[in-house]
Structure formats: C-alpha cells, structure tokens
Amino acid sequence: GWTGILLTASSIGNLQEGDVKIYSAEVESVVCNTIGTESTYRIYTDEYDTYLLVEQEVASVYDFSDVKKGDNIVFGIESMYDELLKAPPKTDVVRFVNIVSLECENETIFKLDDYNSISQEAARSPRLINIILAVASFGVFIILLINIVKDRDNGRQIRKPIRGRFYD
Image (cartoon, rainbow, N blue to C red; front, side, top):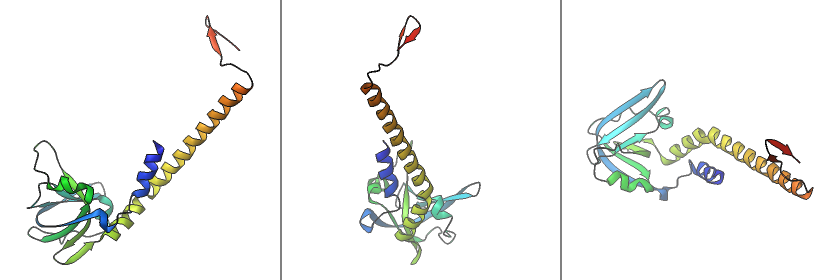
C-alpha cells in the first residue's frame, strides 16, 4: 500500500521527453474555470473531442490570455494518455488530458521542464506527508511485532473471556 503511494509520489514531476507525445491542433475555444483564487484552463480543439487541461499549478504561473480561437498550437501530453486523446467521442463521459507543454503561434508558453518543476513543487508537501505516514505505520507495525514476540516468549497467553470475565 504505502510503497505504491511512495513510488507514485516520487515519479511526479519526473517526465522525460520519451514519456511525452507531441501534437498540433487548431484552437476552437479556451475556457477559464475559476474557483476562489484558483484557475484552470480548458482548451478545446477542432481535431480532438477530448479537451486539453492546463492544471491549476501551471495556470497560476503562466499567462494563457494570448491563446485564442483559430490559433495553431503544439502541445505535449503523457504518452499513456495518447489513446484517450484520439478516442471517439462518448456522450456520457467528459474526457480531458493534462498538457505538459504548450506552444502557441511559435511562442513557447511552457515547456516540459517548466511543467516538471511546477509539479515537483506542488507535490513537495503531499510527498512529505506520505513519507511521514509510511514511517509511522512501519513503526507501529514493528512495535506490535515486538510485543507479540515478547508475549510469546514470556509464555503469556492472550486474555480470553470466560462467562463475561477475563483471566490471565
């Protein structure tokens, strides 16, 4: 359980060029979704039914006001989401892919290295909490194991109820 969480957390922000597929498309529309002080951007394209999502951490750093309808963009997505981007539309499912790089009309808005840096910074606190929880869980496991072994070695038995009472 915890090992998987720690491995997943350690892979955040470590994308390589080989982990990314690059596409180009024409922008149909750009929608900014704001909740409180946090914004994300959805980029809809003529070529794909799946929209492109600019995550809040990236949206808070870069300006997307220059991305407009009719612009030609070049964007990167994680290779594992390649099929999702190209899949036929489904009316009952909202589909999106996170973009990890974006160029608009020969202007680089953000690169893969920028995305990695932002993702690592955003994951720093959750990663630390996961490590603390994993170490604490392991510590509790060791303490319980020591107590079980100690009780067994001392010849004690676990208290068992007899007619509503306990005995040693």
